[in-house]
Image 1: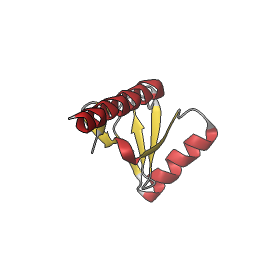
Image 2: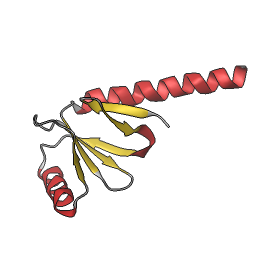
Image 3: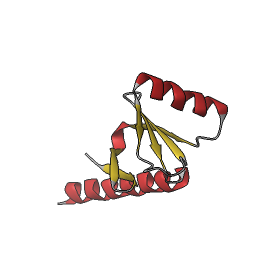
Image 4: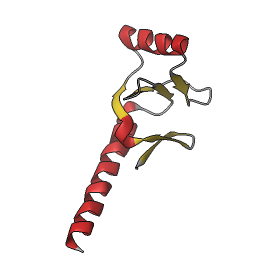
Length: 92
């Protein structure tokens, strides 16, 4: 299982992430508010401004203070590292 750092030492399982979105649009604001009301929101911003909303396959919504592009890059780098490990396992 691979984890992605979503800020301030908080980690999310990479394979559980369904979407990473900006919190600025009205639909995302509604999604965040609904998840807070339902107890599905996980706020890892440490009091800072929310810059990314991460949606998981369990319908949890994670609020992060890290930019969406940064999290996406970490996810891509994680996938590339995983591919490298898979290639090393096959060759060895």
